[in-house]
Amino acid sequence: MAAIGVGSLGYHHARLLSAIDEAVVVGIHDADHARGRQVAEELGLRHFENLDALLRQVEAAVIAVPTTDHSEVALRALDLGVHLLIEKPLAASLEEADAILEEATRRGLQVATGHVERFNGALRACEPYLEVPRFIESHRLSPFGLRGTDVAVVLDLMIHDIDLVLGLAQRPVESVDAVGIPVLTPNVDIANARMKFADGAVANITASRVSREKMRKIRLFQESGYISLDLAAARGEFLRLRPGAVLASPQAMELGISGLVERIELEGDGKEPLRAELESFVDAIRGEGRVVVSGEDGRRALEVALDIVEGIQSNVPHPRPARAP
Image (tube, rainbow, N blue to C red):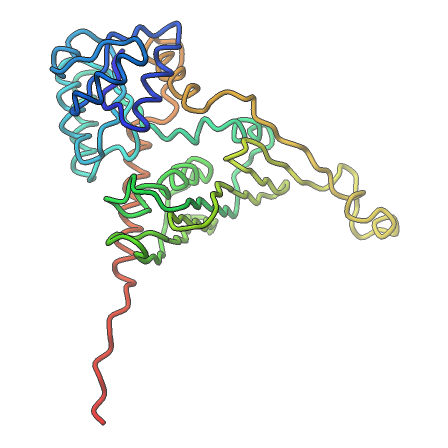
């Protein structure tokens, strides 16, 4: 295994990979050689200044370089027969994403996309109660930081929830309506998107990187009840009508809401989602499981994200011409 790009997130990929028994980390690479050597020394790994020299010695790699470099690095790795886990978003454009997927298919290699929220303990805990939701609402809010500001918040933060929604809805997206504005950077810093699906189901997604407090929450409304998840805390709850409870009955007024509604606490298993993602990828490469978030899944999330960015741009108000006095 190899970790390519060991910045803020790539560092943790390298750290966790080296702790997985089934993964032998041959080395790491970073275009900033000083950073690469620092991380290698800290983690007891080897830094390769020559990327191809590293790729020739591994079966699989994690790519956590800047998004604009995903395509170049991924195609070099695929050309050398390396299976890949590529951090989100899969690529900077659909054309680049398609080139990666086509090359992987041609060479019979696996590509996974690093949408780590799929491995959140709260989501795993709610799976026994999960149906196909009719309405989804998510909020991903964060204080301002410099990381990721080279792109719109849609591609930086919102894409996590786009992927979650697509996985939960299990339906084609029929339409997207979006609005967003730049606040502290030249790019959109806060955005809201409303996604409508083919059967009328709806998802409402908000992402911000200019908020005072952090929030990562998602709520799912389905026929059997209501699921509320705090992704940051990896816990939540499922509320549903108690079996046998009848709302239109004399007993309903006596029981009150607590007597009619059953609350099931949802608690994650405590496993770090990034480690769970990496273990799943290693298992898939070893033929002991499947890729949970495929390259095709990553492309679908990217396509919707780019549609949202385009929708925001088309909704930007233009100044009206001044009226003659």
